[in-house]
Length: 268
Image (cartoon, rainbow, N blue to C red):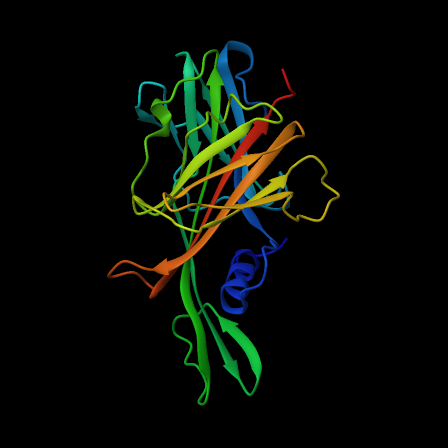
């Protein structure tokens, strides 16, 4: 099994080298179905995956929560932490849309440096870097994965923004998307619109596929973006942003990653 170090390293290399979006491990939370099953039960998987949604590492150190259609935060009915994945269950009793979140996960602190033309890394805060090194990056990973599930008619109370960290606020309802239609949303960082923020969309239909985005977009001056997917199926929306960490953090920068799992229904 791959370690949590391997989960964060791709972000570090991408931040430093400015490479295009390529992911070795990506956080996610995804329901078995986007409509509750018998008696309103909803089952979800959460973890870090190379191919979506086949988890390799469980989503640990998170704080799983459910935002109900009434705007109330509650705990899942059950959370099981396995080695390769986390499993959640929740019984929806009120009609409307529920937000499921992993909660913000503060990961390890990483330093990447160059020595004699060779790039090296460490996540040991006590390690003294060798003389003559050039520090390239020093950050702490911050991950958040979310999804929405609707019982009968969709509602919007669960879209309330956190106004903290990196997040997506739906404008078009994620549980009312049909192939060929526009999916519009806003991207925020600490409550402020993110301008020219890259957005990547991945398909979860073929586990044998290399995880390359099927679509990319960029937010406008209001922090809004829209995408159109012509094929029905399940997708993962991915955001990545490096930003100064708040005062007192363990590193000078945060490496934010946010993902949203959603489905496109066949055309009406």
